[in-house]
Length: 319
Image (cartoon, rainbow, N blue to C red; front, side):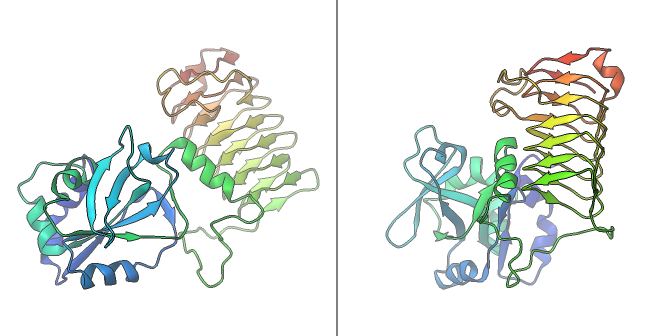
């Protein structure tokens, strides 16, 4: 199991070294953006850089969450600080790196550093040829629960920054062959995305419904993300939740029910805005009331609730 970004690349170093290429592009997997990499690679080659970093301008108030880059007037990188307490720049590293292959192999061979952002770049950035490519388009880091939720909810705005319907730049993804969404006569849907294979018989408001989801009559899903093949049974209410794949919310259960915004006891730093998380294949019993900032672990069974009818805000259940 890899311990970080650099460790993951090191794990495949033999394969990389055998490739008949001069440069290699390393990308982060928890970011959302649309980008043509050719201008970045062109800059990398024209400047004969050892490493070129993709960077993006962000709010100074958010900079503490990122690797922060400073540059001179020629886009040469002068410093790289991972998650600084007092950021001196609002240029964030996008986790996109173009390396000269020989430089990358030499850098990682025999080393023990596990992270590009935390370990390697702060140490070497003033000793090598490093330049920054400033990307001007849409880019969001969804490495936290809150940022993931906000990025999804932003798709429901009237003119979302990420246009999924742009015919000039079609977004391809792996999809299963399913029938169209079935929104029945009893359903009520407002400002939501309803995916193929889902069946909506209840109420869906400002929510994203993934393929294969079932929402029974009398159920209400509000300000939530419901992932593949989850089931919201009759009379259940889901409010400001992320429901993972194959989870089942029992009849007349209330999930995200209280108004008390108590941070989660196990992860107060990242679950403190009122979101409740139900993990994959978890089963929430009928008629149970679950507060906010609650985590229901993946594969939690009804037995884990121990016949409790109320799960207080900020608690964790399961498995």
